[in-house]
Image (cartoon, rainbow, N blue to C red; front, side, top):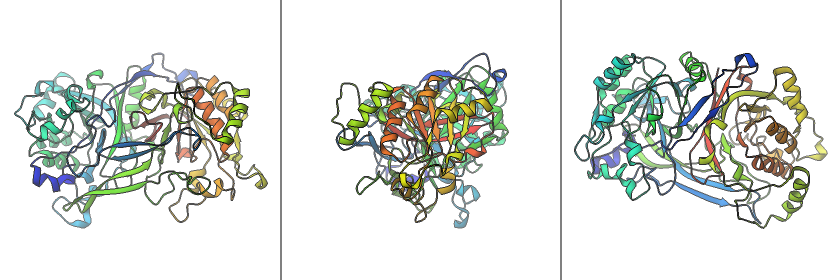
Length: 579
């Protein structure tokens, strides 16, 4: 983000693209496939390499005018809401960060020294295969704190060559990760957390280790397109940050800044991935980094990305798109997705920006706590919901409670073999007199799928293909068929599973259910609430607002990662499949 901070760079002498990724969860990944013969015998593990995003951590770039991260619990379960609804104020330099070429490469139409076609390679245009690869962990822990205050120890080509002598030559398809241990040591709650970025900028502590421009050129000569660092940025202080950024980004590289716990990975062999929300024309993005280690799965996924066999399932996030629910009735809408400019880069002719958004905007994760009250809380229910709750509990058992928010959802719950259940035949099966109504996906539709494609297995991710967003996702003013008309009974709602289908999937060991519709609940408030109660009470999660499911081949692996935001009931993220 060095070009993005050109304004304050001149006044402070220091600057850098911020980002981080830390904290970890390690869990087992089910390697289920359509046929038992393809199932590896040894399980793999998911390792979370992302920083926790929370207000008391140094998760945002600390200099003005960068906005501070805010999580707002706009509505909680009670007399005015059936759900826990959150709003985010967040910019791409928060927590785990993805940098892409327009961070330093100017648009071609500007005709400047650093202009090029890669100045248009924003986060929404990077091909999904480039987000992952084989992790090559270059150990540079000997550089930690080995410099004067405010100065970064330099990672050089010699460090990469040392790695190559010990292991193998790096190449296309690798993700070169610089492991200094910096974020492990210094990402702490404030005020101790000032050591992570602020104390370095104020020249009160040594800088974080980072590669110099020659190292970037060397990696480019090897064909490496994706990098990562456990430093707070990929740019050395005080004066090589922008040269290093441009040296890599001009070749089309992308990278993770602020990774953590890289010591959990072997030097080679792990599959690494970085996924973040798909902001339109974003020069960087907040995100989530993770790896898959052990077993046969990493090699399979590495082979997929090397051969560019990847499909993006997340629609673009843009202010003119219908990304959030308008609600039913005046004043019931969710926070719309807004782009907030805060810093102008004259050279790039670009405003750097953050977003004010509902936490469920676009592709997102729904946690168990979204529809369930927290333990030891007895909310006064909305009047109409009281009768629905009694009806639900008579049939499905206690609704229960949950404190499982986004940071507590293991990543292996949202990664697994993709099982696409086509329910498009249900479209048009409701009566207009019954609208607003959604065709209900029942256990029978799931059984029919299993008869043709094999039994669902624990660890599979079930994706309901309704076709709704593929047909109707359009910018304003042609956006009424996504949410507004179905919710108000002017057209049929999208197919949605009822609580019976959720109960059936739970019995199969399914932890994650996804849909290419706006949400998993449908347009009938009563039935939708019961569906979310069924999910939450069974400690299941949902991924909503996907598209392009018709492109997924039979034997594909689904990867979704939501932002690691503490206490968030839903979070944005990104979904891809590798095959």
